[in-house]
Length: 231
Image (tube, rainbow, N blue to C red; front, side, top):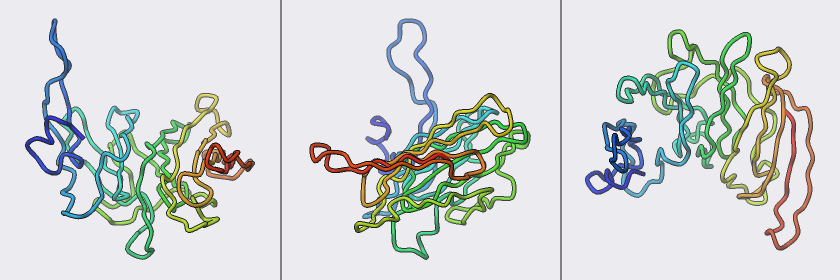
């Protein structure tokens, strides 16, 4: 949400801004432009600002929000929108939220660039990115049109249920020995059941489960369960 933009436009939560740093002794950043992602209908909750976007190797950026879509932007062209597709599951077929709260993470492997994301009530998903043409090849370019993941995980956020909800999906990070094959590891913190229960999943870049460990926190921390999994 951009405070100055919110004063003049009701959909500022769906319009990521681009700002220019102040020069000289100036303080703050001036608004240069903003991307017109979508308009959130009254009474709904699909704001784009539910997570932050991620820079790709070609300096373009991709991000998602509560509508579960990936939005690919070109910051060099005043945040022009290059591609849109559904990066979480299709909520039209399953009555549960598919919000994206964790920023996508990027792995530059020797055989390509891969972007990982894990929305609410969903599985970890991987999408191949082409930095030469600046697109996700083979993916649609239409809002709410399901994308085709290059790989998909086997563990579902909140699948152990306890009245599900799945909030907030997963927060990801990646470690590797450069682009050396077989060294990429995706680390994922997610709710094993219910809402906001802590959990960590770990696995290789092909989303193969390597390790899982669960434990119970004391009542002082809301009895949250921690799952550690290597992918």
